[in-house]
Length: 182
Image 1: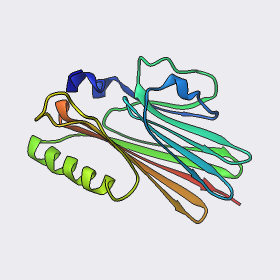
Image 2 (image 1 turned 180 degrees about the vertical axis):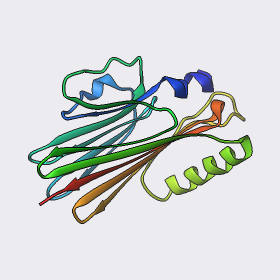
Image 3 (image 1 turned 60 degrees about the horizontal axis):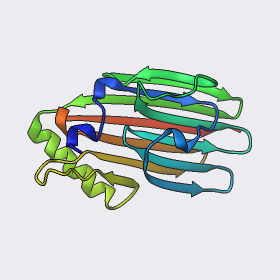
């Protein structure tokens, strides 16, 4: 498998939010972590095309997906749908007690800056969060990375992801905030 076949092209990616769980069988899961707290549970999955993050409490279930646009995904209870291009912010007052905000940036970098950012993600991913380092078959090729962090703060949860696309010198960054309102 070549490096370019590990990930789709960035122009073929989407960002979606669902108000329901999605079956893990829909995705090629490469890394997985679950975080359980007293009043919610977060499941982080890094996939070949991006990530699937599920947040669940007693009243609400949200599933955030960064995936290939041609990947068959359900339409039912889809709350947000954006192509991953440029920069975008959106919000959704999902329920009386839960708010959701997201933003993403797609950055094409000069090769030397991309290499520096890539190395920083590798270093940071070794210390915290969930990191998946794709292993290319070509010995000296730069492998794509998927990195997701989950930070719990009183009343809110902050999620950030970084997905690298070495063939395109591109980094896709997403940030999401889930707020529990009283």
